[in-house]
Image (cartoon, rainbow, N blue to C red; front, side, top):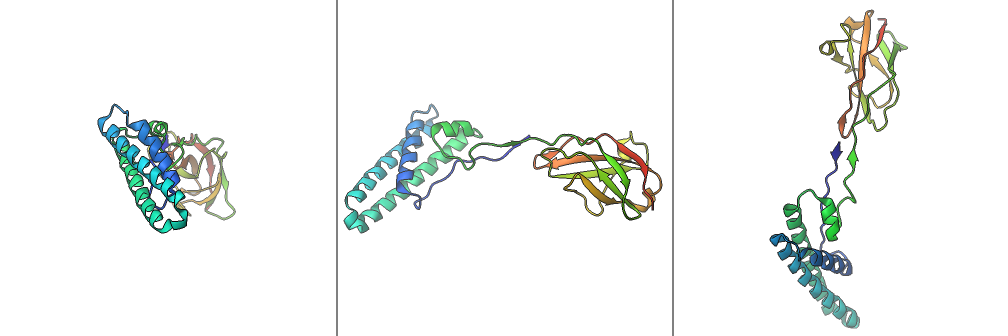
Length: 220
């Protein structure tokens, strides 16, 4: 299984001051009591920056009719709070690595709501082969595999129990997106019994290869 990367979302001075203030205050309070010295120190700084931004927001609201000066101050304080939040996030990621559950418990927002594990696809079953509509082609079909993005095929004209005798199917393509496909058979593989193996793939990687199937001849 493979997990998608998860990081703590960063803030900037273009984000809404109220949102920056609220989350910075939350994570600052939650991390300032951490037993990890570096985390606690950055948490305390974030708490202070959030408090300063809160005061600036209040002042700006009270002075909205003369907002030019007040807004400039608030924008600056918003940037400082966002910077304190980001510094804290960076330290938390270093000191408590690869632990999105702990980060969420502190109150941080993550780049993805949770790590989504993608399971490998299962094995291909019920494979079958027949002659294609054109000489030298084979129609391969099998049951669809849940979660599969594509399939690859291998073929042998030798002993089907010997894995090293199989070659990859590369024509007309290497990967096939459907559970039925028409493939080109090499000239020296025509008119002899052929056995096939198929593998399902997705973003996590390759699933287990199928058992050998087929046994029919493809006409040239």
